[in-house]
Image 1: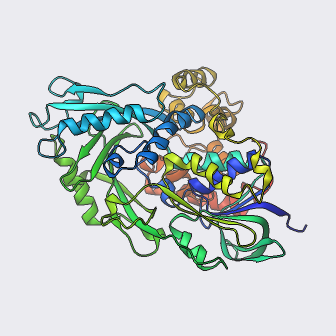
Image 2: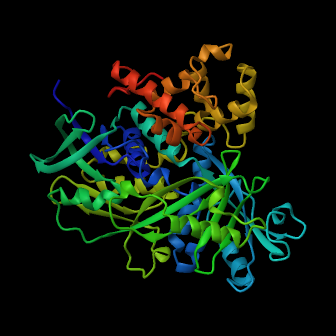
Image 3: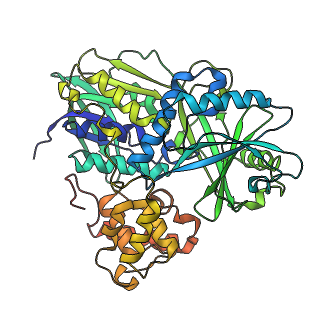
Length: 514
């Protein structure tokens, strides 16, 4: 059949591209999105995994960005309570760095700049008595401040936006690269190639969004667009994961002498996530990896605060991503703006290119992208702002009732251990029961790949969430790569490849009933 003419084509399957696809498809537009690799395979799965205002951005006068980000915390928590959760952050006062009065002022602004109804306000801590002081160097940190932000499973947030768009009719194609595009007959003609078999074809759309993240300038170089006024600054952020360094469920934010901040966050139950570095990057963003120097830097910086030094021997996993920041001319990468700039080229069928942004503000960014396209696509005026209230797939329950959902899943499936029920609820929310179906015993879930990853779950991830490799499943859709052995991951990869070779389990272009 001939390809349809879409209202909007989107290049890039990160959080911004999938956020635009969700918002636009929910307003009734026909959407095509292509991603050259897997969804969230770039910076959108390599963040520090925070939904936050950005406390340190206040020092750089980024009040508009901080206000917008702060107001989004509870919005995202409400629409995705399974993958977003509140988190309290402990900021020890370090003598010789930022003075206590400045920290108090910043936290006062943080509490009052944005809308906050559910998250508790800032508190002052006596670290000599509070349990949060126990893991820290004895006597070095006596006063601390505790404030609220949120944590997010970043890759799952991206997939859920893509899934919601798909359920509304959007066509999402992964491992499909946009080679070139041209304006013709009042439309965009986008040439895309299937990275699996090299098949090329042309997609037509009335408007185009360049949401390629670190590759946004590479895409622009292949388009007949007028010269861009804006530029990207590529900044590498690397993280390390260790066995858990403390027993409580609060996170730490540490000040470093080089003016950077460092987070130490409870991660996946048994681990601690530490990051991130901020270094200017040149080269292919897909090849970013934590260097030995970055790993040593993160260990040394954490060791300035923790009583037990963190060494490279403690590191069990690292990940690194390249953030596509808007180049505002800042002298240091740490000072570069986290705000976004949207560039509209309306010399014919419109093109919007996205420079910068952060995961916290992706939903508002999507709204602003569609605002720019509204003159060409009047349908955009319908359902303005709808994404602020509509839950993402699996998230149609009150934000404070996650534990109740865990218990409900255990009651329905008594063969699940508490940790497994919690993981499934945190990953899939109400959709966990669609994975488990009518199973009354574990063996009904099929093959066990290790770490309680069942064949039924793998099947769901392939059939519904575009997973096509063990990496997609173990490191993005779940974080079970932390618990699976190398042999188990290899066996999972063979299983997935076999299913695909048999012609099954790849998400079709049509809406899935699951």
